[in-house]
Length: 283
Ligand SMILES: Nc1nc2c(ncn2[C@@H]2O[C@H](COP(=O)(O)OP(=O)(O)OP(=O)(O)O)[C@@H](O)[C@H]2O)c(=O)[nH]1
Ligand SMILES: [Mg+2]
Image (tube, rainbow, N blue to C red; front, side, top):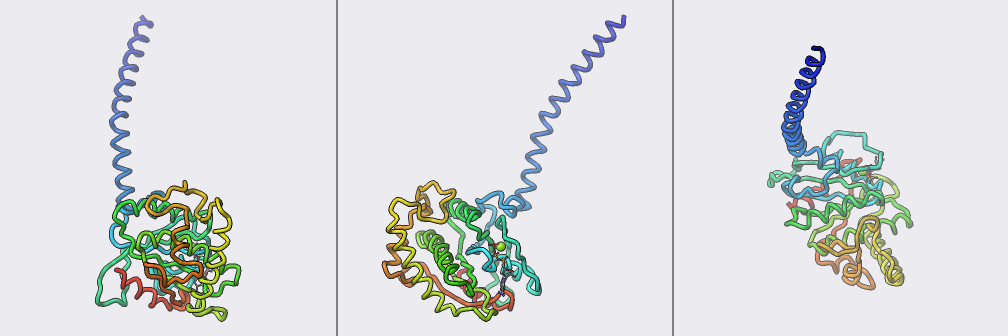
């Protein structure tokens, strides 16, 4: 008798087990689909740098904010987000972040909005920018310009590093017809140099860099080298030959087909109008 009861209980339990498995098999996929679509709509993947392909996620015009670490990129976005903010981030950015639907309040004629993406400047994190370019330039790009941030007070050694970073960016922008603004930040500081002098100095540095790179045949020549596979897909390969050729043996920015302009400014002093004006022109 007790054996029969036990068998009955086991049979019911098995039945229940099958039904629960069936139910879970239906519910779990539906749940996953709902959660994923909610996360995509909220842009959480993009904001966290989870997805580098923002051509679909970031609809509308895009400006890239790039350049060496500590130049003031994140401070610039903070200034745009909160115009009256007086404290600026001093932590190295780890993942890129997007300022969505930004509208320049000073621009009364154009009412267009844009998305501004702040990429980390640290060399080990620079692959994020490369991946972004790779993914967005595959399709019709909505990148309206690159704002290359640099610290206008840097010493000679840091200036060489800045020139190397700029060369890597120009290697991509020039092939893809993207204009560049070099935002010479921190003009509030005593040691700040005028943009014209910076431009001349960078050209001198580029001359040395290009000569050095030409000599080291076979070496990987881009600071983007930690992820790139060397293929020049979408004009984003490691080869700097074309850009070096275009700049010439005595490099001059004015030889480039895409626009490259230099403008001083200061995020701290709210002296950013020239940069915003340039961005407005590109919208
Ligand atoms: N004096 C002065 N300091 C500034 C200015 N803009 C930014 N800074 C300071 O520069 C430092 C670096 O600023 P961030 O905005 O974090 O630099 P970043 O370019 O985002 O650096 P990464 O995230 O490492 O790429 C901070 O201490 C800022 O307060 C400026 O216009 N003038
Ligand atoms: Mg930053």
